[in-house]
Length: 194
Image (cartoon, rainbow, N blue to C red):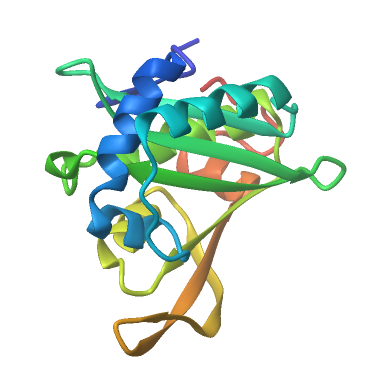
């Protein structure tokens, strides 16, 4: 079996609160990044405040949430983060969120590779049935990346977000376990090997 948390370009890791808070503080100063990731108004947080939040959040760590950091294999550089929230264990449904904070790492295939690694974990390790995500319509780079990973458009919230005097839709995209298995050449009913 392959390394569950390693792709062709990236690996999923966990980082210390110090490393995370430094990275998040730097990434959150980039308003283009935060506006692609979040619908809330921009807020600036100190590295200390972010570290306190991370440490408090780590204490909770419910089994429904899986939080990873993303490192590029070539440089072993921390470039982003990823979370998988299982919103319905009986139904085996989860939402995924991804942020590549290092802008020089955009448009290089990292997002698609990260999502492929996460889907392998979701469908082989957690035995999920569906993984869903949301993305703003003004982020075509992310939309293309998610499509490459096998996500399909499932709907949208019309005029969800007001940015720079214009209303934007929030898109819903999802992938089912059987779709992922077919894309990865697994026979129906077979146990995927990753």
